[in-house]
Length: 353
Image (tube, rainbow, N blue to C red; front, side, top):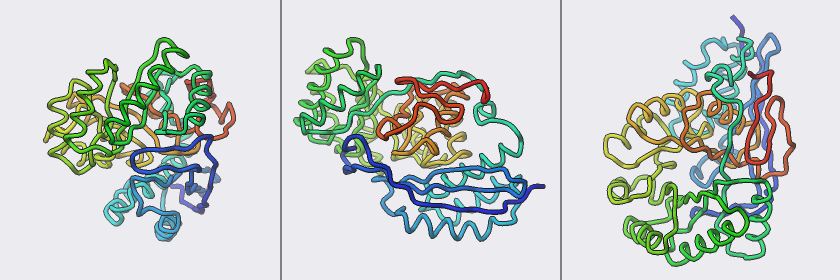
C-alpha cells in the first residue's frame, strides 16, 4: 500500500495569442489551478482545473477552497483507492465538477506512476498520431482575424471549428468570410460550428436554413442552444441534416443517458476537464453503445490538462472528432515529455508506447 503524502496547488495565468471569443464571452488569458499529488514513495501526478465561461461558479478562490478541503481527507489515504474517494467527492461537491476532475487526473497519474505504466498504454495504445482541429474564435476585428487565420493555415490545419454568436445574419456573414479565406489559403478543408448555447430553437433552425441556402458545408454544429433547453435540442436534432453535438449539456454519465433517452443530439463532446477520468470513460462507453458520435474536446488548458485528453483519445482510438487545440492559443514548446506537437498533430514517442 502506498499513501498520499502531499497535495499542492497553485494558480497560473497564461496570455493567449489571440482573443478567445465565443457566444458566452471572450478572454485574452487562460487561468487555471495546477494540482500536484506526491506519494510516499516519491511518485508524482499532476492535474489541471481550468476556469471557464461554462461554470462561472468555479473561480480560482473556490477551486482552491475545495481542493484544500479535499486535501485534508486525502493525506495518508492509499492511492490504490483513489477512485472511491473521487466518487465521494462527486457526491459532496456536485456543483464543482471541474475541480474534482482536475484533482482526479492528478490522483490517476500518481496511481499510474506507482503501477509503472503510461496513460497511453493504459487506454489501449491505439495510435501514436492524433490530429486535431483548430478553433476560429468569433473575432470581428478584421486585422486580428486575418493574423490568426494566417498563423493556423501556415501550421497545416485542415479542420476548423468556427465559433458563432447566435445572431444569424452576423454569423452567416462571418462563416462565409472564413470559408472564402480558407478556400484561398488551404484548398481542402472542413468547417465545424460551435454555438456555445447562443441560439434559440428558432434561430438555430433559421441558421441551418441559411447555411443550406448559402451552400456552406458544415460537418457538425456543437451546442447551438442552451444546455438545459431539452425541447429545443430535441427539435433541432430531429430537423437538422447537420449532426448536432452537445457539450455543455453533458458533464456526467447521467447527463449522457438523458441525451440518449430524450433524443437530444447526434453526438457528445467529452472533456476530461469537465468530467474527469472515470466519468469520461463511462460517458464514452455509454455514447458508443448508443451509436452516438463522440468528440474529444478541451477547455483553455495548458499541456498539463490537455495531455490527459491526448493520451485518452489516442490510446482508445474511439473518437470521431478531435478538438484538442488549446495549446495552440498559448505560447508553447514543441515537445512536452513524450508528446511532440507537429503542426496540427500530436506525436507520442516511444517511452509512452
